[in-house]
Length: 227
Image (tube, rainbow, N blue to C red):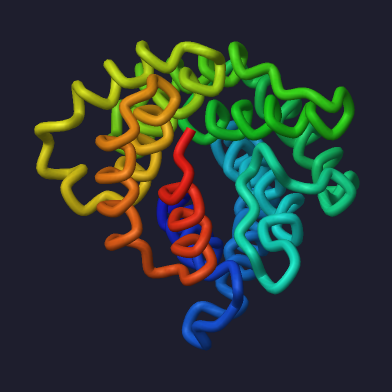
């Protein structure tokens, strides 16, 4: 049930511009269902973890687009557009979940978002902590998405070669062939280690797999001047 709610939220989250009438309001409905689930199952730590995760994500919804609906990556978002009340609520819900001492996937994902949210108060992101949390998530649920996100965090923590190694481990998997996030992350990491031609090729692959026009423009700009 929790996975279904999260999947619904993710579908609504992907439509950042709100142009798909079939997805409009889906994220809000998923948030409502997450709240109802916590009310019905107050002892379920993972239900609270999911609610905290969605609240953290919702706190940054407005900041995901800039002038003329331009895509803004998390590390470059305007902190003034983040919702402090939602972050505060998310932190409280996550704290309540942790008191049960029953860790799980959604609590770990919420903890990652909590680490990102600390930039709202400190002005900085502790990428080493973010990378470690991603490592814990991969040990808990070694999905392709979790492993790609781990590689991205490791790169941001200043270990691009290690990040590339993590991506290389996935390179032969059928699951990454059409996985846009893999190619976008690989392009960024390749640029960081100075392999520019390969980076441009990975960017082209990511662009071809992108359905969001704003993200496509963002990747095209990065591909034109990788690094």
